[in-house]
Length: 426
Image (tube, rainbow, N blue to C red; front, side, top):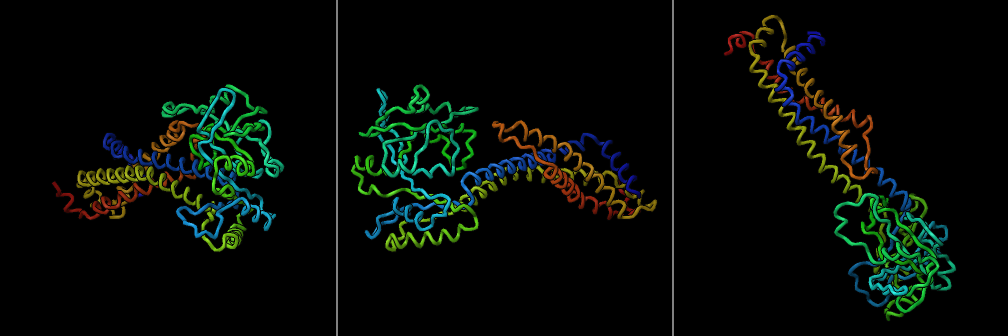
């Protein structure tokens, strides 16, 4: 039989049993749509991760205090002087800054009181990476740090572009309400017992538009940034802190991915010497974090893809069962064709052609369904990613492969009938 004859015969059989053919395609259609939607979500996550990688920098390292480590008394712990030593030893590093946080500090402005303030102590280099803010006024300078100036920068959360329903159950923080009602730029405020001048206001992006992967959904509400020297000499001493020089972390940016490994080893050796051999710190490569994100992306994609695969398998089984039932309902036809000279190959090709046409029809129906899902299911417009032609081609190949594989057994079964036995089949 010529290819035209095969297609004509297969199409005629499918058209003669329209209801059966449509039902056999439904599961496969859903599976192809789910697969295409998964491709769209994977592409969105990939683009977001790429944007995050650019935000944190290509050679980011993070030095932290080792959790659970009990000091032997030889090391003073991770300190701001460690950051200065790193900067002094390798001045070509793009960014080095210490950072320390304190929670529950007291904030006063006129009649407003807040006991839940988070104060962050850092340096001017804090703004070199992870900068997503709109700044009014100015940020900290090296001079502010050198002189332990009583200045601060307040962080205002960005709210929502499209507020999710669950956010209604979480009231807005008191400090956020104050920043919306009053302009505190160049005003004086009290933190603990010290007077500070507000030199800048940092406005975060909306929470549903924030490009930072590790950013808490509730932002840095109630956060004030001060020079780390002011933090250590004034705020912590007012709380009788035992180790006012210690910091929570040191952030390092090498400027290039190529030098990360070398810098990591050198910084580790320097800190081991400064800490007198105590392993009370750990250095993390941000590439490990990104690898962790990629792993979670793969897990999410796999969870969605499993649904598509199950539906595709169900569709394939449906096509196989329908094709198998068709074989036994057309035994006389098979015997007649074999008696008239059709070979086993002709019989196999005919049934595989029917299954292939069904699977391609399911793919053709599933692709627009998947594109519509990618366009209208995401609640955030930024998550709308329309899969490209490559993904559509992959979906069609999956549908085609499903049809071919599901038709192999029924087609082989049909080819086994001997002409004489098939003509006598009841």
